[in-house]
Structure formats: C-alpha cells, structure tokens
Image 1 (cartoon, rainbow, N blue to C red):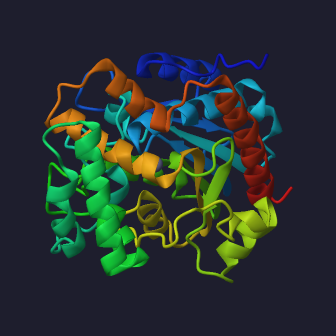
Image 2 (cartoon, rainbow, N blue to C red):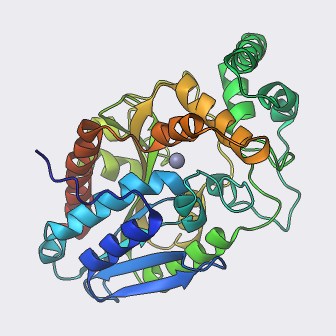
Length: 350
Ligand SMILES: [Zn+2]
C-alpha cells in the first residue's frame, strides 16, 4: 500500500502537514479571512542565483493534490538534494480561500488564473461568453437542464468552430460576475499576495524554474504539460531537455483548440522576473475528460449562486478536481516526484 498520508481533507490539515515537512524557513501572507494563508517555504540560501519553484492551489481545490505532492517531496528528503547555489521555493495555496472552501475560485467568484490582467486599462472583451452565459447558467440543476446547456454548447461550437468556442467558454470573461471563468473586476487578494511573495523570494535569482500545479482536464492517472514558451525559444528547449518531448508537444491534451487564456498567473510571473532566465510550466494532473470538467465548472457556479447543493452534487464537484481514488493519488505523488527532481536538476545545472 502506498503512503497517502500527505493528502488531506481540509485546508488546515494540509497546511499543517506542509509546514511540518518544510521546517523553519517559511513566510506567511495572511488572507483577510482568519486562518487562511499563502505560505512560502524556502529550502537553501535566500540569495541563491538558481531557484526551483513550485506553486499549487491557483485554483483553490486543486491545491489538495498539489499540497500533498509538495509535502511528500519534502518528507522524502528533497532538502538534502538541493545543490549549493540553488534554492527551492514552494508556494502553498495561491488561492487559500478557494482551497479552504473547496472551490476553484476566490471569495469573489474569480478564477485567479484569469485575474492577472492590467486593471488600470479597459478589461478584455469576450463577446462569445456574453452569448453563452444565459444558456449555461440554469436556475435548476437537473439532468435535463444540464443536457440542455450542453446541447446549446454543441450547437454553438458547430457554428463558431473549436477555437472561438474555447476562447468563449474558458478563455476568461470580465463581464459576468456570476458566470464561469470570471476574471474579476479588480485584483484579488491572492493576486497581490502572489506578486509580493514572488518579489520577495525570486527577484534576486538569475535562473528560475517555476511549475504551477493544477488538476482537471486530461488523461486520468497521467499529467499533461502546458508549455507557454514560444516554440524553439530557449525556455522551450530547456523544458524539452529537462522533461522530454512530452513537455512541449502537448501530449495528452484533448482540446482540439486551446483557448487563448487571459490573465494567467504564469504570465505575471514572467513579466515580473523578465531579467532572469525563466523556464515555466503548467502541469495538470488529469481527472476527467473535457465535458466532465465543463460540467463541474457549471456545477460550481450553480452551487454558489443558485443552490443549496445536495451532498451528492458537492461530492461530484470535488471529485472533478480532487479524486478520492487511492490509485489516482498514488500516481500524483509518483509523477510529481519525478517532475520536481528533473526540474531541480535542470535549473541547478547538476
Ligand atoms: Zn487549474
């Protein structure tokens, strides 16, 4: 039997395990809601030129498996393998409110991974989403109403094509605060905290590897890499050298067209640290096929704005991002361990 004790069923439990495994060097950014934090653990010298960084919980609930991966890696003696001149920086719970409340979004129903836009400028328009909103926000949650929403989506996709469909549905929208993939009307607390922590811990580094951990769409029991470095660029080539061809060829990605995402956390990270040599990667541990995750997105929105949810609906939602199945959890630990070891090795030059 695999040791799954790094997994938790509550935020506070996950945080305690992480802090315990991390040891002394942790800084805390307190969220306005009592007891919630972005915690940042540093292993190695604070002024190291090379940094291997990992973050989790950008999408709240997805932080449970991410947290377990970080905790297990720390428990396994990761600190002892950090070479001189390199530090490891681990962000625990980018969106602690969503983590604690077991939802992807923030306290304002905002998808943090669409919130890193410039709020001093007009916000991006998403006319496609404006068209979708009514059809995908049923007041009642029944199999009929859900089937109706998906029928509408299928017709919309047939009409506009895969790319426009993805952009409309999950590229991010700034017009409907009670909708899905809502990017917000202002910077979220978690956005500001992430920027502060990044500045504090990474602004001195010259070579940085950063992985943002997610769960959701993708082959179950496996993970997918979403590399946003332009093909052939140095960052792209480093990712390929460290994790192999699958890190850049979108292996396992089932979307026929990936949305043009707006306001990603990783974009802000890159903009803030533009002077460093960056290798960034989004890694997604697969849970369900696309329609299952889309259904979960609609369900999250329904539970928040229409509810109250029945226990089986809440369970269904949680299962889409944090499966209970031991085999799934065991593979997250195995695969993340290798992911981290390779990233650390790559950025440290050892
Ligand atoms: Zn995610």
